[in-house]
Amino acid sequence: MAELKTSGRPIDQLLEKVLCMNILSSDYFRDLLRLKTYHEVIDEIYNQVDHVEPWMTGNCRGPSTAFCLLYKFFTMKLTVKQMHGLLKHPDSPYIRAIGFLYLRYLGDFKTLWGWYEPYLKDDEEFSPGSSGQMTTMGVYVRDLFLGQYYFDTLLPRIPVPVVRTAVASLEKMNLPTKLSGSIGDSSRGSEETSRRPPSVKASLSVSFGQRAPHRASTRDSSPIRRTVAPPPYDKDGANGSRRSPSMRRSQSRDLSDRENSERDRGRDRDRDKERTRDRERDRDRYRDQERERDRVRDRDRDRRYDHERDRERDRDRRHDYDRDLGRDRDRKYDYDRRSIERSRRDYERSRSRSRSRSHSRSLHDQGTSLDQQRTPPRDESKDKKAASSNLAKLKDLYGDFGNKKENVGDDRAPNRDTSTEEVIRLGGSTWR
Image (cartoon, rainbow, N blue to C red):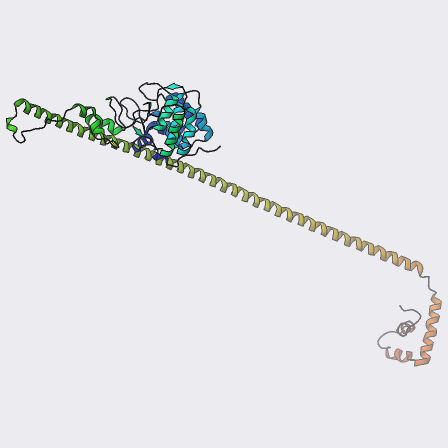
């Protein structure tokens, strides 16, 4: 949604300084902090506002409910759609009046007449002030655009070319170009003694002829000052001894009245100072409460942060413990698995060895049995004949050394048949 085009001035400079300070320090405006939406503020206007003057009526000289809610709208920065909803609201004319006030104080001057012009002939009646004087919405809008004062408070000044364009449009529509008085007088000061003064200080001092802030004509416009005639001019000069006793009595009475007024003026000044001090104390108390609220909020936030940090640490510790426990479990599982595999390999190795031994044994046994089966039985007579023939040949070649050996070995060993041994030594048909 498009935001409403404004004049660009800060919101604390839109209203008069005294009115703005009173709004910001009022308990009702602080209570409006609970309102968060545009519709909640409209409901509050519908329930609480019964006039759109800046100040409250009666003895309580505080800011009015309407202007507190208007300042609340200043802080919300309304959109174009929301502004159309305010100006066309059917429930209460005061909702529409606050919308027109929002445009008059904060709206852009170049587009202000474009907002006001469609409502110049609006015939809805209501009472803008607390006096009950009725007027139409069209007259109220026209006076609000052309006027410089709104119930004795200063309005933002509209540039002269914009005012001239608006006056020309009013003349074309055959509408008055003069103020009708629906928003108060066209200048500060009032001819009525019951008229509310423009500020709190003026309300406390206007009856005594004091000068109020932002009001140079208060002394002259006071009803008491206008009714009290100035002292007669003394033509005799310093010749006061010739005056009559009645003249002296009236002079002393004037002096006593002046002293009383001075004393009352001093009392009012002291009372004003006390009110200012009380207002400053309330403001300081409110600031202290805000600071204490911020400290409590920061302390709670720190506690929550510490609690979350402790929870994170506990979670990390549990995670580390579970991870270490899992590692130990995996390590033990790997050790058990390796030991089982090692024992199985040892068992398989020992078993394969025993199998190989038994297999080799069985093969050896089979081999010997086959050899025995394959080898035919020897003929011993043939062997002996072969051996004796071989021995005879050797004797023919190398001579007969058998007798010598027998003579030498008589002393060592008994006589024995050495033919077989000779055959073994010198070779034969087979070796044993």
